[in-house]
Amino acid sequence: MRSAICAPALLAVAGALYGQQIISAKSGLLNHIEGNALLNGYQIMVRPGEFPQMNEGDALRTEKGHQEVLLGPGVFLRLGENSAFRLVSALLTDTRVDFEKGSAVIECASLPQHAHLTFTFKKATVSILKDGVYRLDSDPVELQVHAGEARVLQGGQTQTVGKGRLLVLDGVSVPGKFDNQTGDALYQWAKSRSEYLAAANVSAAQYVHQSGVSYASSSWVWNPPYRAYTFLPPSGSWRSFWGFEYHSPADAVIRASGVDSVEAAQQWRDAVAAASQQTDPCMTLRQ
Image (cartoon, rainbow, N blue to C red):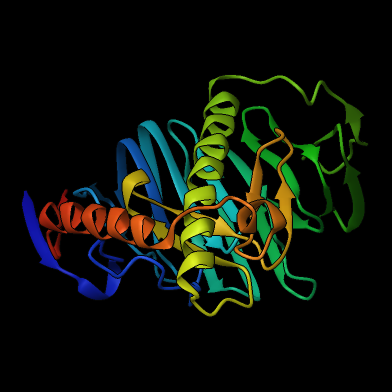
């Protein structure tokens, strides 16, 4: 059965003016979908420039392919095949995700000092403490910390897991070492997405700087040519675990780039116009 629902409140449409700051009101924006994904049991059918917004209690499940979900400015959740999670809390200051099965890579580029990012899985609660790259798997049931630091509560005990360590989430294991520089297809895909969005960041930061748009905090900004939201840090630049850099509009690299604002503005207007022509305000769902 097919049904089409018009949901403008759920979609960040590509026709929005480029340079407008997108400071997420809540976590759970689907930034990129490859293959099949189901939202609350319905297959998501999106057109270029459409971005479904999850609500608290919503469940996302993948079949074949990969999905990228924005949990807050600078926090990416990337799912592998046959994976599922439920968004328990969409608050940017207290994002909580119930990981149900499969594999997920979490990249944190700008975790606010007083914000909480928590994943629950079976009887374990994983709190992300620092910027970095993390991985959750249901088979085997474990947490890998490629970079950063996490606190795990299970079996009434709290354990801290640091860079290059993994912890089997069975309630009795202690953190062990693993090779944090290699990985499977999901790891490589997450790395390529990080590289792609870092490339999108440069032109986005250049435009925001040249256009004089007010900018004071971490945010997502729509990049029409890349057809994705990219991350802008609040100041300076941020280098990912994989070595890709995200620049703020005020970063010296961006200010010295010499991009002509008039030419850049026209390029972005053309890109936005082209994207808008392919955008439908309705999201089609198929059960």
